[in-house]
Amino acid sequence: MRSENETVGQQRSFIEEARRRQIIAAAVDLIAEIGYGNASLAKIAEHAGISKGVISYHFDGKDDLMTQLVIQLYVSGAEFMTPVIAAAVGPRNRLRAYIASNLDFIDANKQYVAAMTDVVLNLRDAEGQLKFTYAEGAEEILRPLVDMLREGQRDSVFGDFDPLLMAKSIRDAIDGTAGRAIQESDFDVHRYTAHLCRLFDLATISQGE
Image (tube, rainbow, N blue to C red; front, side):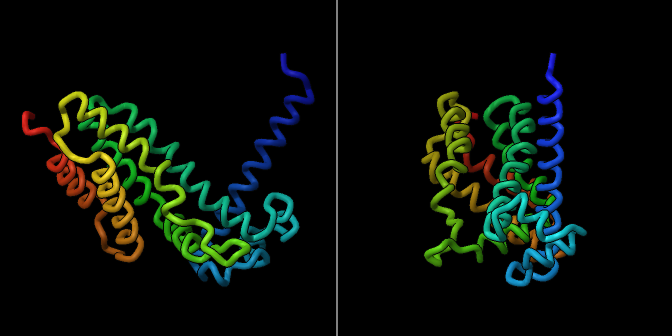
């Protein structure tokens, strides 16, 4: 049986997490509207309908808020994609699910992706260097995809290619699609998803299939 203190602690944690997500959502909206450089904590607080002090309680300044904004998008993306990929049967279907779920998430969160891109291109550390660089997180991002491709090769479903290079090609295509979805108002993500799934299906298939 849970103690009263444990229940209260869980409720407080839930409320705090909800508040953090609210603040991040307000930051996303504002960055999409006026850009990263103009989105001060005071303006974010005003947009969220809260005091600047509330933001300071949950985040250690603008840099921390922007960092968590980027991290939250990756976490949300993983939460969206994982069950879709897990439900797919066989390496080819899992690869299609990987590509499609990535692009479905991007299509449903264009404003957030645009705001995150603005943050990634501008947020700098104490030395003035960009805080987020692709090289730093590339291995972690690519590893599940590389493993998926290698599994398909072991099962003779996929052909003979370098799994790392193929994974980089797939990620580049997905990231490029995100850019187009943000910049081109009439870009048909669903149609392009079908195109990419077929393209990489043909690129990875074993000659024996």
